[in-house]
Length: 99
Image (cartoon, rainbow, N blue to C red; front, side, top):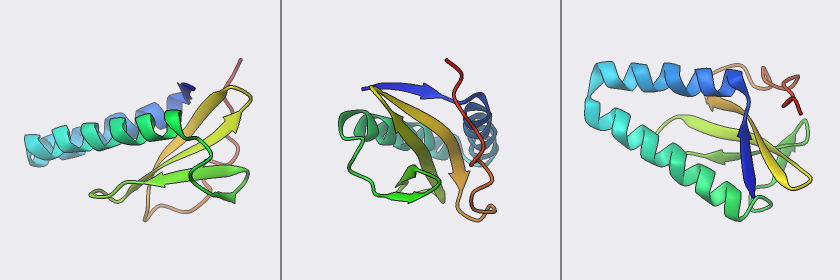
């Protein structure tokens, strides 16, 4: 299934990547790999993760305190946030992917 990423979700990813790059390069590489694995899992099995709020689902990363928050729309997955788990829940709820 095709994945589309909201620009603000992309910015959240890049900000987090930059943070991990300043710490240890290996952590930045692991972060990228884990987000890519989440995208792959979501793409292959978009219904695997339960709906939790605002018609959204989340794949919680294993080693980092982030979730890939997405909505399934027809034949696409819309990633609306790369949400840090200590951030205020639902801040992303109004985000929509433009057609």
